[in-house]
Length: 509
Image 1: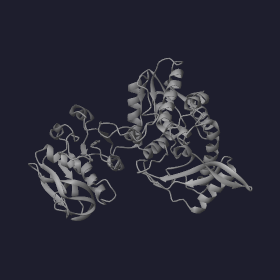
Image 2: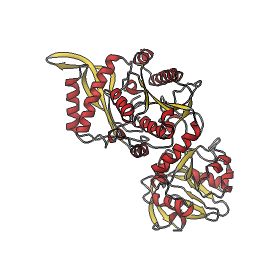
Image 3: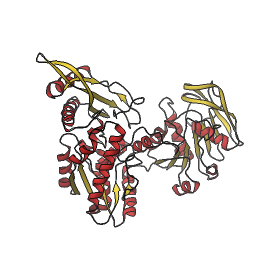
Image 4: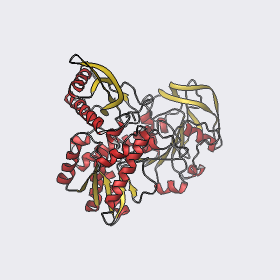
C-alpha cells in the first residue's frame, strides 16, 4: 500500500491512478492525518502531493513532521518536496523565474528513482518557488535549465523529492520513476486486484455489519448495482435493496431493475413508487443545488420510512466513488470548495438515523466496472454510462414538471439509440440530452412554432475528473437533431455543447 498525503494538487487522483496501474493499492488522506493513524495503515511508502500553496505562506498545509521518523520511504512531489525540505531544515524561497510546462531534465544520478532512465528526459514543471538550500544528508540528483534543484534524495533515510510532476503524461518516464519508488525502494508487491478487493471488502463488511441489516438505494446504475452485488456476497439476505421510483428516471429503467435484481440475482428488493412526492417537493424549484438537496432529503425520508418496517436495520449502503468525495469537499479539510453536492454525499441530513457504509468510496469508475465484471454483472449494465443520482431533474434546466420530463425522456431515447447504433456508446464517458428553459421560434408545416431547445452533451473521459467534448461526426449530429425535432413534440431546436471540464462540468447542473 502507498499512502498519498493530499496537499491540494489538481493531480492527486492521477497519482493514485498511476499507483494502481501497477496493481498497488493506495489511499489519499489529508495532512491532518495523525502519525498513529499512519502506523495503523502500515503503508510501504508515502507520497506527499503537490499543491497550490507556498510553504512560507501562513496556514500552508503541513503534515506531522514525525512522519520522517517512521522509517517509511517518502517521495515528495512539487509542494510535497518543498514541505520536506522546509520541515527538515532546508530553505524554500520564491523563484526568480517561475517554471510552468515542459522542461528538459538533466539527471545527475541514475540510481534509485531514476534507475533505467537516460541522462536527459522531459518533465512537466508547475511551480513558482524553489529550493534554496538542501537539508543535511540530502544531495542533488537532477536539474533543468530553469530549476537547479529539480530532484533530491537522502537514500540513507529513503527520502526523495521531485520538483516536477511524474504522474502526468508530459513526463514520459514518470511512470518508471513511480515504479522505481514503489518496487525498488518501498518493496511493494503487485497484489491490488479486484479479487483481492472483493475478499477484503467482504471481510470488512461482515465485520462492520455483524448480525444487523442494511438497506441500499438501488438505482440501476453501475455504482449502486456493483455495491448491491458486493454487499449481497457479504451479508446475503441481511441486505434489502430499495428501489425508489422518484419519477426522474429514464425510459425503461424501472422494469430493467425489477427483473435483473429480483428475478435474476434473487435479492431482497422492495419497490417504492414516490413519483408524486418528489415532483411535489421540486415544484417551482429552479436552483440546481436546491434540487439536489431536496432530492437527497426526500430520498432519505423515503428510505427511513421503509427502514422502519424492517427490524434490525442500522446501515444505509451507497455507491459513492472517489470522484464523488473529491468534488464534494475541499482537498485538505479547510473551507469546503464545493463544485456540486451529490445526493449521496452532500445532501444527507445531519439527523439521519442510519449509519453509512460506502464500500466503493476508494474506487474509480473504471475499477468499479472491472469489479462488476468479477461479480457477474451483465455486460450492458457494466458499460452503462454514468447517470446522476438526482436523475433527469438536473438535466432539466429550470422547473421540473411531468410534461418536461416526458419531453426529455423521448429526446434521450433517440440520442442513445443513435449513439449505440454508431458503435460509440462504450467510447463515450457520457452522452445525454438537456432540456433548456428557453423557447425559440421555428417553422413546421408552414406554421410558426414556439418550442423548447434541447442541448446534446457527449464527452470522453477516463474518470470524470477531467473531460473533453466528443468530436461526433456531423452526419450523426444532423441525424440526432432531425429525429428529435421530428419525433419529439415540444422541441424545435437542437444545439451541441462543445465545452470541456474544466472549466465546465460534465452535467449542466
